[in-house]
Image (cartoon, rainbow over all chains, first blue to last red; front, side, top):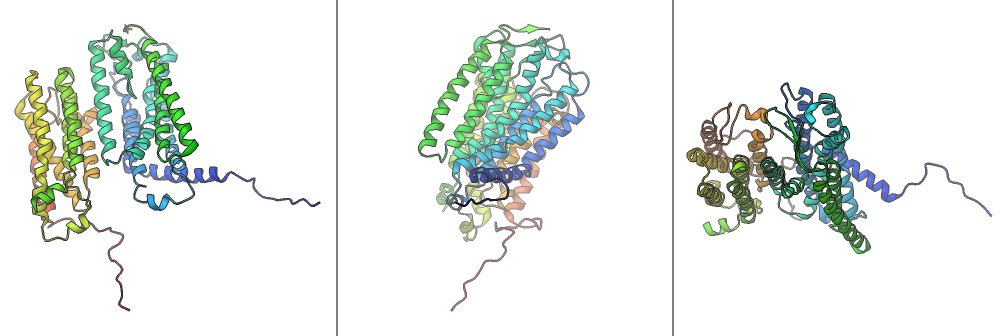
Length: 289
Length: 215
């Protein structure tokens, strides 16, 4: 009986190695995308310059990461995904499946997510959590508000861009969706100012990938609106999961497709529950501090 | 010939984006408190719709036909009526709802937005057959800058809403109209373009094509 000993690095799964190589390649393409570079440059400048003196609320400053890392990141990943359409006949016959390529594209969202985390740290340095600008929220809820407004949109926007790029052929879809989301958030925020007590308006305000939780009335005090920031983070993460699953669904076949559809159903139900909890939780009426 | 050039236009894109603009503008008319936020978004979408009017998937063939770029662009400019009509519809709805806006300035802003999108498409069309996506994105980023970045709004206002500081929207749009007229004339004429802009959309990496030698 003979035994063959092999020396060298431990064997890695070929699928994982391919995924890693693809993810690194796509990440390199994202960080060289001019729209994404502009977004990061603007965020760096805005955070370096700071919010300026005379700030009466955090809401004048914290939508920037959501707009630039999330919104512009969505446009960048949409282009990244669409740019491979022309070479699909060639890429389609390689041993790598389309869901694997989509998963590699989704992995690039970690870059804007990391940028969002850094932006959060700088924001907390500029406006400490103990500041009265956050309104009547508890310290943990203040952190939740910031995570939901700065970090999660930076992750979700690029994931939405990948899903959009996989399913929509229209080349201007990303900026149209960006404008529609911007318009929606603006409308529901204005509605919340005039109908702060309404539960329906609270649901509408939270039925978005980004939401404000406070408002100020000419520096008199900061009013916290209805809604739980912690459950809102759950709703946002459920939206991220839905975006990934919808992106992966394109080109999936057989058992993988069935599993993705099942997971999509579960994520949809979870998102709905978390949205209701986000609207019903937290303060049940506006509170001014 | 006019019918054929018009039929080849990217009508689904122009109509779709104009439709989205009508929805957003309609919401602005329905919620007067949000009108000054939503009408600029509506106009930006109309500018983006105008940027898709020159999309020509068969540009490699069309660009070498005897029909010149001036005539082709002139025919395609008819498609601008779609975003202009959509914008007019929104403004009519806003007027019916009783919104108090400086209508002459708002009309000028609408015209300026649409022409700005078209001018961007004309300039990008000298480089590629389908300028819509690139020109549309650039137009959206430029026009939304005052809304997204308050520091920009201190210097330039693109919508005639009450507010302090910055150039007046009328000045901005008259200037934009003049610049757009020059840009369209130069890019469609194909003369006096900067040397880095080629008149035929051929990849810069490949200036020559392989020829088949007779046996």
